[in-house]
Image (cartoon, rainbow, N blue to C red; front, side, top):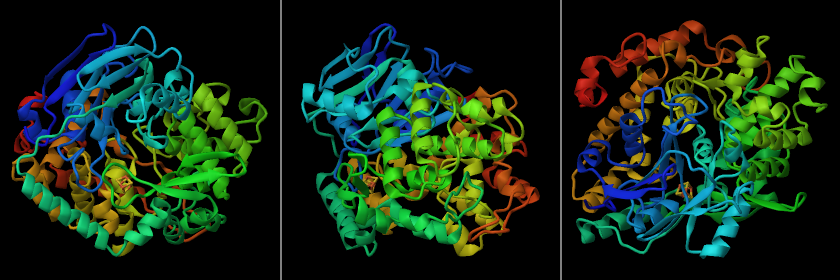
Length: 607
Ligand code: SF4
């Protein structure tokens, strides 16, 4: 199987049994790799209604056929499991150098099963694979633990590791790598922690088989050349994702004070340009990346350093909680990274708690004496530590904003900003109906990376509710995640406008299989429908109510900023869903019709 390492590694943490099996050709044909493999193995192997925190849940790590090859950004892998945050499908992408090393070690996917009786780490050096005691690392932060493992094993080992957040069962714990890259969303780190798997360490020295070496060389060069000549390269490389902050604030998409508005008074001091001048010390990229968007920052005030903050973190741990100093935001980022929790969910639950405090729903008694006001930087730092330790108010917040608001009540559910239990990432969607729909229907909950439709809203008219808008969201949902399936970064296409057709000859030369983007979009639709059925299978009574956004976005117009007074209506929200379901070939309750499943070749798998 060209483009694939050819083996799936299965690690049973309960028994300690480690085995290898061939990567199934039929699964590679229908689901390609990465996120596709994750969705397939989750649906097929994890029993219905499995406890996300029990031994039946699995953690599936998958590369794609481009991972580890010289294709721009081909260093992505996907972590999949049943989400402890949402109770549905979790899939989170990780960049850096880990995936390439996994392929060099001869492994396409690792499937972790069971629960280890004691803390362990998985050691892989080509064919030498063993579970080793990790008691000496338990309780340590991700940056500290990664450094210790590298000192012990060698710099050439690539490491994915969890922190105290994952060990303690925080519902939105992350898996960290390369001192700053995360698979952050949906609680993939929580599942790793419950399994008592502290880290995965990999070193590989094999090559990856390629069908047509000369064709691969030519196609790879064409892609790199296109990146090098891209007009947007200088801006992207200088600022990375924080380059979008000023735009988001100006158009009213910048999450502000728990998404009560889309423009932030103190935004200017959070702009990418300011960040570059004040704290960035160097750029950092993933495997094979010609356009490194990672920014490594030093916070003199705190004597710390961090990879970041990215735009999402600036929004969620900056404007959303009222912090307007980039060093403070970067320090909050550092704390989340070291403690191993997702910055987006952390910023959302803290923003929600701050609004509760302002409204008198949470009191000083609930907060342990912390003045939980927007802009209180020490309160943000304290809550991050409390969440990771599940102490004080952090115990409630560590469950995520859906469960925390349900437990708190008093109307706080209305400003708990999530879909399906996943905290909405950093785009305020007041009257931005395409982005709102993208969040509502995202297959993991309200995450932006499946369909980044906010620019389209601004381009065609944010308030419009049209079949064209819905079709655009569906196209993005089928197409964008295919980069996660192939094991490559989508940002060269998004930010540098690299022609997507340039990937077609590369994929063909590597795998020896001809696939057009239309073929790949069909694979994208297959995965989308499979994961939809997964949500329905795991959650009794799953229906369109699960797709509803936070009431704030149809009841509570912002009073300040670029979107002041703007709001969409509940009617429009329902209209968006009606059109979406029709175009997807789903019933009005949001479930795929049998004919849709048949067209996508899913009937047998889901029977
Ligand atoms: Fe990694 Fe950024 Fe390069 Fe993508 S653009 S491969 S995320 S460094």
